Length: 450
Image (cartoon, rainbow, N blue to C red):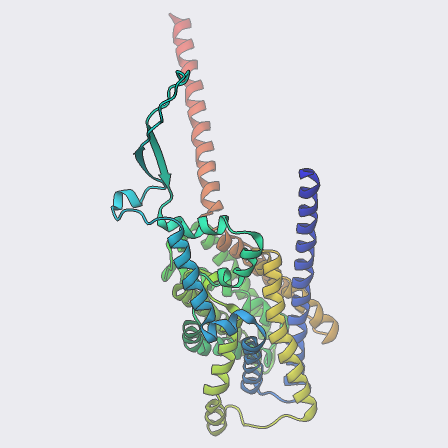
């Protein structure tokens, strides 16, 4: 019976993983198609308005806030029902096990134990087994009361508290809104840089240079560490060197553009990568665990603040001459709405769902597939011919993205340092063996001469 149940669970896990991989691959296709559509709007439809495109698509994140109408836990946070239920549940859990003594030396122990005197009634027959009249009582500390309460709950009761248990330790709506307010500007600037790059160079070059955000994240995390695992290692140094070499080659390949837009587009791509790295590192310093932040709610507030606060940018750019304000045609409006709803709102939800079904590591590695997909799309759809410098630079950038992702996932892993230590140990061991053989040879030669 246990074998059958284990086989059923493993089959369900395989189906879950397969569904997650398919969803992540779909997200890659959507993102590449979204970039190609944006490039088509800028170049073919002659509506080169990166700020307008970024503002429209980012503001569509506000659709996530419909969760306050459709998602019960969010409604309960608004009405305070969940907070009251959580307080009552914790109070019940605290009362479930008697609080321990306030002695710090005792509270740090896993188990609290004390002894009670036991009285055995006299019996007419003599006992063949003698029992001690001291009973040892072991008790969990109050910090373990919640786990003890949950472990003794029935399945229907646990399901009833499921919504509350998922929100234990999560940030409140006010905290999420504050974080969204501080980071919406960095998020907008990162996306604006990406849109500006798409208006100047090919999608493949933009995606390759934008993938260096993982390397900038490693560098900034080492400068501004949020925990002890953000130290800089030799493996990270190798990944940075690979990426910088690839970026240089890809940037040189974009210099063939006669109007000089290739260099400007490359700089915009790198600026977007740096801004996205700043966003990642700073939000990690603000939120120590990613499960504390409700990601859809965060993006919903980002869209709301962009919609409410960044519209004066149209006036600034219009009167300074950087981007004249002009409403798009009906066809371009349709393209922008489809691109925003599918390429921004839906794709973000699907990517989060795919990461939930697989893992954050697989979800991040799946992003690297946008590089070959965008190269194929540019060659097939736009008939672009890339030079050998482009492909020579794309390979190290692609490899460094994989290395950076693995190093971010396995925080304390430094394979380069481990490899160097093994090589050093092997050389030293070989040197010791040679010295030992030479010593033995000299001794035997000396003994023979004697």
